[in-house]
Image (cartoon, rainbow, N blue to C red; front, side, top):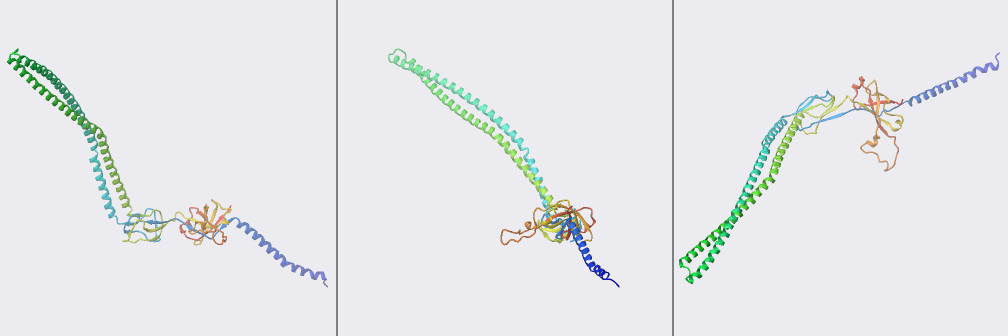
Length: 400
C-alpha cells in the first residue's frame, strides 16, 4: 500500500512545470528584448525620406516660332541632342545686317585713318608758312623804320636849309631896301628860299608817308604773329581731334563686331539642345507655337546624379555624421541599395519652410523637429537606373 510521501511527489512536480516554462519564456523574451535593444542602438532609420535629383527647366533664349519638336514626354535623351528648333530667318537677317554694319564701320576707319598724317603735315606746313611770314613782316617793319629814319633825316636837313634860306631872304631884304645889293640878287635868294621851303614840305610829306608805312608794316607783323601763334596752338588740338575721331570710328567698329557676335548667338539659340542626359518630365511646346525669351519648353530630369533626402528627427542625429554607411530600401524595388551619409543639414525643415513657425507668439507646443540629411548612393549599382526623383525610400544609417 503506497505511503503518503509517494502520493504527493508527482503532484508537486506537475505544479512546478508551468512556472518553469513561464520563467524560461520570460528569460527568452528578456534576452531577446535586450539584444533587440542593443541592435536598435546600432542604427537610425526613418520612413520620411525620398529620392532627389536635378530637375532642369529648359527655357527659350530667344523669341520665335517653333518649327521642329524632336521629343515626347518620358523620353530618354542624351546630352547635346537637338530637342527643338525655332524659325531662324529673322535672326539670319539680323546677322547679315550686323555684318554689313561691321563693313561700314571698317570703311569709316579707313577713311579717317589717313586724316591724322594729313593733319600733321598740314599743321607743319601752316606753322612753317606762318614762321616765314612772320620773318618777312619783321623784315618789312625794320625796312620801313629805316625809311622813316631816312625821311626824318631829310626833313631835318631840308628844315635846316630852309631856315638858312629864310634868314638870307631877311638879310637881303634889308640890303635891297638900302640899295646895297642888286634887286636881281635878292630875287635869286628869295626864289632859292621858296624852293627850300618846298623841299621841307616834300620831306615832311615823305616822313609822314614813311611813318604810315611803318604803322602798316607793324600791323602786318602783329597779324602774322597772331596767325603763327594760332597755328602753334591749334596744331596739337587738330591732331587730337583727328585721333579722337579715329578712336570713335574704331569703337563703333568694335560695337558692330559685338552685334555680329550677338546675332551669331541668337542664331545659335534657334536650336534648343539638351544640356544633360536624362528623361523628359514634361513637354510644354508644340510645332507652330510662338514662344518668348524665358518661356519654358520642357522639363528634364537628370538620372546621373541622384541622392536621398532623409528627414530624421533631431533626437536621431546625436551620433550621426558624414561618411556613415546607409542601407536604402526603396518602396518600388525589391533590392536594398547602399549609400553613405554625404552631409548634415544646416537647419530644420520648419525653419527652411515658406512660413517658418513663430514660437514667440501664441501658445507654445514643443514639437520634435526634423532635419534633412543628404545620403549619396554608392556608384555602379544596377538598381539606380530604376530610381526616379520623388520615390519613397527607407534609409537605415549604421552608426558604427
